[in-house]
Image 1: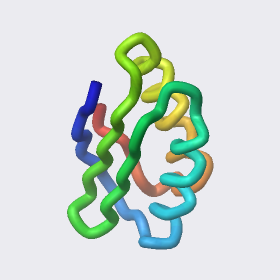
Image 2 (image 1 turned 45 degrees about the horizontal axis):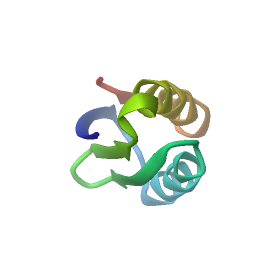
Image 3 (image 1 turned 90 degrees about the vertical axis):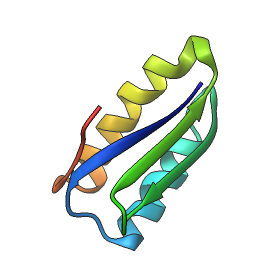
Length: 72
């Protein structure tokens, strides 16, 4: 399942890169993109693991960049 999700707040390119690498390591994640310019987050994960991957991704965003909110 692939889903595009809006982000709120602020995020820099460096933090976006850190978030991408951490999310990419999650079980079931096929692809991830965080665009700091358009404030969009694209998550592609196995259907049966998507909800868990999204929940873990939101936690990663909170740890790395608390000023950025995932508007899922």
